[in-house]
Image 1 (tube, helix red, strand yellow):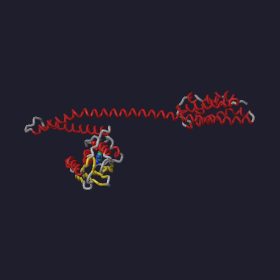
Image 2 (image 1 turned 30 degrees about the vertical axis):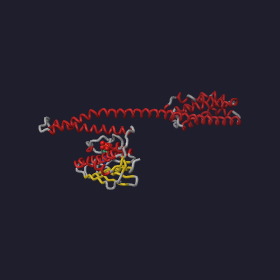
Image 3 (image 1 turned 180 degrees about the horizontal axis):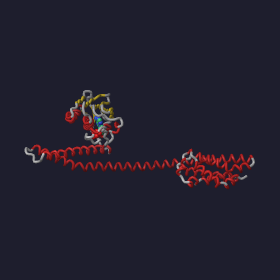
Image 4 (image 1 turned 180 degrees about the vertical axis):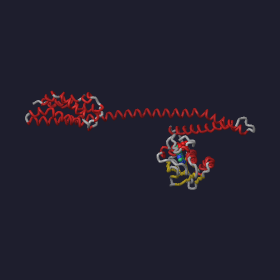
Length: 395
Ligand code: ADP
């Protein structure tokens, strides 16, 4: 009996039943997104190829089956089938073939039947193996394409970010000149009015100019901070390492922040006794770090104290520890606050504290530049401690 002919004769009926079973099978959810035709597409070729291989005269034609199964695997990969769904699809195919050929198989001699069953099993297994091979390489190709696409998108995004950063720092530069003259003229005007024995302007007008001056200074602060971050990110921030006396840097900062602490009736203490005798670093950058941390500690503390302490940790490292009894920072915000423009004001009463969200972003970048690291321990409503660990001599 020629089972290949029988298989070919019944191929339409087999395909129809097979597609119906695959379509209705709960374990092949990928078909829910597809049309009947899309599920059907490559199967007739697979069946034709099975029939060709089955026919005794053309056993060398295994290549047709291989090609058909490879094609089927690629299509299924494109259709988003999972490997388990393909395995299930072939299992259904095998059972449909056997049930459609059952009557014919029973008519054959036992030897013919055994040969046909074995052959069908072998070639369906072969078809599955080939199909999986091409399915896997199809998926890999898809992933490679996706990866290439992601790479391109990433490059484009990086270009856009760089362009917008350049625009931002260009804009900041442009704003600086008119702003400096607004601040300069307001200062001059106020000074003249206050020095004059007969001020020409009403006190309310002077108050307005004073507000312009304060807002202008705040804006200039924001612009300078933005430019500082851009400079760091463009790799343009350079260091001028020299021997530094830590206590004189701290004294200079103390002088600047003391009025603010006094205005809030906070106790401000600075202890440099345990600082290393000689440090080689960039004094301006060091001053910027301490200034930012101390002014934050004072601004975010309503009552209590702010304390700065120096420690010598080893032959190579020393630390500056700034602690306060202020509002504290929640664990979720503790890493975010080192990113630019992030503020972590937990309660509305602190919203009026002026800020840009750039201070700590600058501090963390400066600490990195000085080859150090910064650590934070904080508890909401209890206070914060920022520890900056620095090398005694930067390389
Ligand atoms: P700014 O103070 O200008 O908002 P910073 O980058 O210096 O920006 O700080 C980011 C945020 O971290 C602040 O808005 C504040 O929420 C929080 N923060 C910084 N220092 C302290 C501190 N000592 N205590 C409590 N919160 C702080």
